[in-house]
Length: 216
Ligand code: HEM
View (cartoon, rainbow, N blue to C red):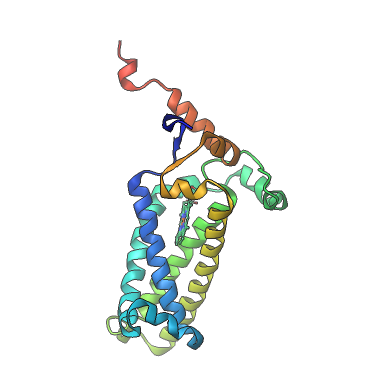
């Protein structure tokens, strides 16, 4: 396929932004599991030392939150749920059999759920993380609140890990999707098959004359 036929889905800054979030997530998830479950303590040695992992975990968590906020403001409009999404959700059994359902826009209902679940869990992780962050903030909060925050932090972390496992599975399962986030482009066939409404919008935009062409 000729390069000019490919459709750009993510610019380089968008991809760098996404992979910073993904890297921070991996670090925070691996270290978090290492702190929480004694059987996963060995994971902490993969990150240098357990002490280093303990110091870096909250800072990397904050970096993940801030980097995700850039993605949030970039994509929230594309992730608003509409009528077509209900069709998609009702026919999830067909989607599981690799059939396309509904007139999907830039993101399908499954991707939208991941998006909203990610922002909710990240907000919970940030708020609870500040309450339990020793030595900087925890001393300012009463013990019962710290206990509650620990519970919220653990549940939100497990929730986010499960959601991201689904996200990674979907990214690998739908052929051509990973290329979108690694190289930035998709083929017209991929776009037409998985995101027909987005494909039409892209084509419409491409057929609009540029400002220069409009000039007499
Ligand atoms: C660690 C491995 C990860 C892989 C392999 C991965 C892969 C991908 C791929 C291939 C896409 C493009 C999907 C498309 O355009 O149709 C994507 C989009 C996206 N990813 Fe990831 N991702 C990972 C981690 C994360 C993490 C940790 C988060 C957030 C906490 C995240 C949030 C997103 C968001 C918000 C989008 C845009 C989709 C939307 O807005 O609904 N990803 N990812």
